[in-house]
Image 1 (cartoon, rainbow, N blue to C red):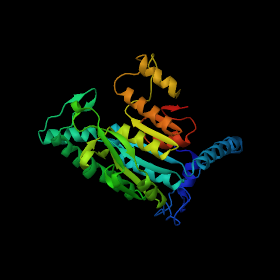
Image 2 (cartoon, one colour):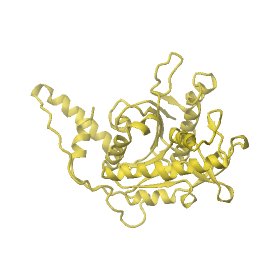
Image 3 (cartoon, helix red, strand yellow):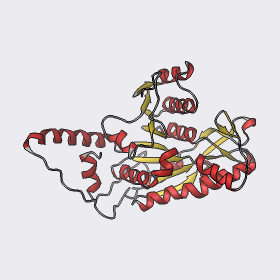
Image 4 (cartoon, rainbow, N blue to C red):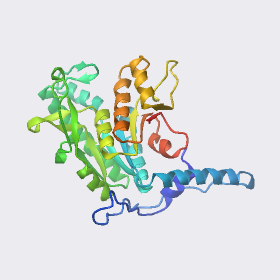
Length: 323
């Protein structure tokens, strides 16, 4: 359910102008909506008017508190397959409300599909793809050439401004081979944020494919969660939102844990409560927080509008990791 404040603000035809770092020429407006959204005014009686006002004021305060915040969103999994248009609309809404979204996307299922189509075999070690030069060509083709442009185009079609790039552009993310057994799978060594700040200053949402530059200009395949965490830490983003195919971090009884400190999150990996693919997600969340991100959230990307609900819904979505 959309909160009343967001409906009112989304309906208002406005242009938001923000500066990042307080330097450089005045940036272009973040969003010039093509038309105002129409929604029916809620019917309020004297009995429920005060409660509606309280909800509205609380929502407006949350929106106001987030203005100017950089939010890095990792987009992947089920949400990427089935909710791309909805996700794009959410990014435009966040931008119109004064936030600075940065999108990092995955694409594992789409890569697998293309590899099968081309009859190129690939294997996995500890959940990570073994990336041969032949596989890397497909990875780069799918991530940078296909999915990256699709997501950026969807945001533009929804009324926002987005540009698709990869970690190789402007040597933004440089790295090295993570493990020779994994081939061209990389780990980030340095993130240069100047290009990202320039795009954000101009009111443009960066959409980033997780491909980095290795030694001699070699393309490296980075895990999208890892790339998102590294970028969030380098930008000192207010929040890192990791959209996954699970509700969040679960305890031993399979119940959602709403909040964790970095120490408590690390302990879940040590004692075996967290297993499989959840371990690297938790590790990336911890790394981002320790690098300067205020909060990293592992959330259910299958929930439509999960990013907006977490930021402005009042109750939060998924598991928030912070110090």
